Structures are given as C-alpha cells and as structure tokens.
Image (cartoon, rainbow, N blue to C red; front, side, top):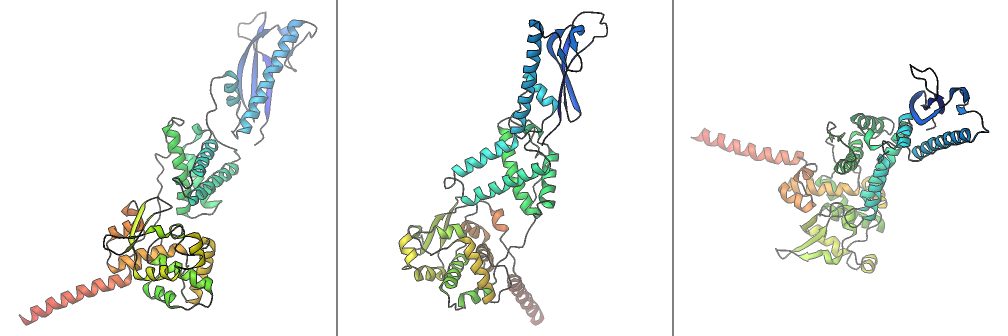
Length: 412
C-alpha cells in the first residue's frame, strides 16, 4: 500500500535561545502522522534556507559537507521505506525512525514464518506429512494472504498479532470467503500451529490464542445403511469403470480404509493374523498410525477378483485405484443408478464401515477405533452413529424383557 512520506529538516529553537547555532532536527510524516528526532548536527540560523531545509552558502566546504550529510540521511529514509514495503510491512513514521536509529529491529513477519513452515512441510511429504496436508496448508496460507490484502496490508510483524487479528480473520473467512464454521476453524487451527511455534521461539511475547477457543460443530457425516450398501453390491454395471469403482468403494466399506490407504496397498500388506485369518497391516497415510484389521469375506472376494488385473500385476498393487476426483465423479453416477439419494464420496465408505458395518453390529467402539487407525477415541466418536435400527433392536430386547417379567408376575 502506497503512503505519503514527507521529509523536512529544520532548526529547532530552545526556549532560552538568544544567539548561536541551533540543532538540526528531522521531521518524518507518514499519512499525517509524524515523528521528530535530532540529526546530531547544528547550524547558524542566518545561513539556513527554512523552505528547502538546507544550509546556504554552497561555496564553503562546511556547507557542502552538511548538505551532503542531510542528502545521505534522506536517502537512508527512502531506503528504509523500500525495505519495509518489500517485506510487506505497514510503513509508519516510527518504524522508519527506529530503523534509522537502530533502536528496534523489524523482527520476523507472519507470512515469512508461515511460508517457511509450508516449505518445511513440502520437504517432508512422505516423511511425516501427507500430500493432502501440504495442499491444505497452501490453501490456508493463500487465504491468509487474501485477508491481509483485504486489510490493505502486505504482511504484519509478529508483534502485531493480537486477539483482534484472529477474530477479524475468522470474520473474513466466514463473510468474504464464505466458508462454513468448521472449515474456518480448520484454517485458523493451522494459524494457531504457526503462532505456537513463534511463541516457543520467543518471537512473540504473548500467545494471542490464549483467549480464542477453536470449537468444531458436530456435523452429519454421510454413510450408507445396510440396504443401500446391498443395493450397490448387487447392482450389475455394463461399464468396467463403474464396476471397478464400485468394487473398490465396497472394499473400503468393509475395511474402513481411506482412499490414500487403499491406493497404496500392496501384497506385502496382507499377512496371516493371530487367528490364522488374512489381515491387513499398514500405516495410515494421513496420521502414520499403524492399522491392523481382519479382512472380512466381502473384502477378500474383491481382492481375489482383481488378483490378476493388469494394473495390479504391473504396479504390484492390490486394487486398480484411479484418481480420487475420478472415483468421486463415478460414485455420483453409481448413486444415481442405484437410486441412492445421498452424496456418495469415497470418504462415505469409511463412515459406512464405522457405523453400519461395525458399530451397528455390536463391535465395541474401542475396537473400531483401532481398526480405523485413530490415535484418539474422540476421533472415532465423530463417526459413531446410533442408528434407528440399533435403537429399535435394543428397545425390542428391553420390551421382551419387560413383557417376560409382566408375564411371570401375572402367573405368580
């Protein structure tokens, strides 16, 4: 953002001044706000051009030296202004003054630190971070740059990060960027990670997130009921592409593996478990948590079906997985063909495993959490659904129990 910068050198009179040289002061004005300080030089008022702010009598060496000094000082002011602008820092008269006097360093800026973190994540993809994590960090950085531009700022010093900055950022995300609450919280959570690093490095004295609470609203995660899943399994497709996408989706429904985890599966990930049955031993791409799960018959049949598939043989993979975007595109078509009025995505399969396939059939949530590769049980609880069928079965058992007691009491 361009700001008006004015530079003026003048002689400052003391209250008790009678005669003699006066100190030369520099007045800096940026957008109407000014600061003044001494140049550590003095000059005779009778040989001073007040309008030009320069010494007169150019034929004298002393005059030329003073004016040369003032010109150099003025050049340093413009240089300091350019440096601040290049860093995207909001230029003020005090910032320029402090930089000239060497009293205060500019310090690190928010985008500088954030960009460095994103570069580190990029370098560690596959060695601690997933490609999707990098993509989300880049998107969050882009939204932060847009927010600063919206505020007519190129960047901000870390010392300027306050609670108000975070709340303004949240408001911007929800209004200007039009993202929902949970998405906004996810973006702000990444900013919080950066800020915590700055606090740990003593680049920020006080954590602006101390009073800001990141709250995620509960959402209804799409999943399939058993009859909907059966409808997809039993549907005959003439297209090979829809058939293979359906099979891979169903495989995920019976294993709970995410798209990235299914895509990377190889024959080496299939082992004989403690029970003598076939198990999958793998690490989740997203969290690097170890996942160990028995392979249910429905999933085993799909693996056997694609054992000799050319793509699987050539690439050493278990299933011929295509891009996630194409998978989700074809799943929408599958949903229409099967008359399922839900947004069918690959992640829906993971929800279906957690709810319809396991929890609804009485598998303890602790076991489901382990199979999903979650580090915390709280994460699994987001997937857990108490379905109408489960409620009906539980209440039916209670009803029968109460009826039995009533019958016993009547015959007593």
